[in-house]
Image (cartoon, rainbow, N blue to C red; front, side, top):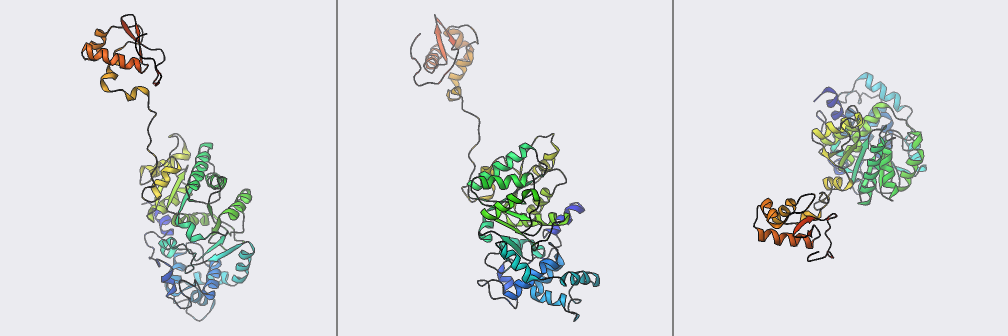
Length: 423
């Protein structure tokens, strides 16, 4: 694995990540919790909301401290100069100074009020709504998720598929993403993407067009329309589905946050489909993270000469699975029996002929007529059998009589009403 690949996988809880708690029950063992059924305590929720402004997404040191001492205690140590923060494993003076600089301006009550005003909420580990599959990220697990929309995040995430790809996609890529989004939504799957231009937007629109379910995972605050050109689309998703992200209200995206956002998409869903991606693509980061987490990875092939499909083809040469429509995606990520229909070419009338009939038909010339003996010789059969097969072919409309000979009909048919007998 390359250095770049190790960094991407580490950000998604790869090698070097300490396994975090598997589910909400692990967090509920810490003081300050009210139990799995009651969700996170108000104190813990407030602390984690504050920490979303202090810790960057994917901060694995911060994730380890959260696992070891909980959100409320970690926030207390960061904001209190009693020497307890310095005793945290991996904490340095420079890092602590950066955390404290951010912590000075934190107002979690205001952030919670802002997301509530936007019709949202803050979901954190221990809540009933928390998707436990995010715990597979280990210490890179989100501190919490800011969510807009009324559906239950945990229930929607249980049956979800990510469709991601190039921003500057081709018309072919946009068509495939829209078709996949619509087809998956019609089959009861939640379509997850990043609300970006290109493939992401097309996948969301496909799901919305059929009245289906879709979720947008943002690299900014859930009340920020980014990209601005998708303000209407993000509003539609929030009204019909869910918009979520790790960053607090009004926070804006950065290049690194886009990359780190992809690990959430990969962990949240059962599988990731890549539609058009170059060799250096954030969509391939999502696919690699999905592979590392044991999720299904799929790719839609494109022209071999297209640079926008080069990354997808590289994925398919590895552990990725080639898919061409929603039925094939559902077969990969679905339950037992959720199979795509068998694929084969059209059945031609002559495909129903038995082998001897087929040989007799092949023995007739394209032009002109031949007698039964010549047909038998060419078909390697007896004259009586050849004559019987010729009459059978005549009844099916493949051949016709011409004097004492036989010739091919000009328009072979397989019609139940075909004339029988001599011409």
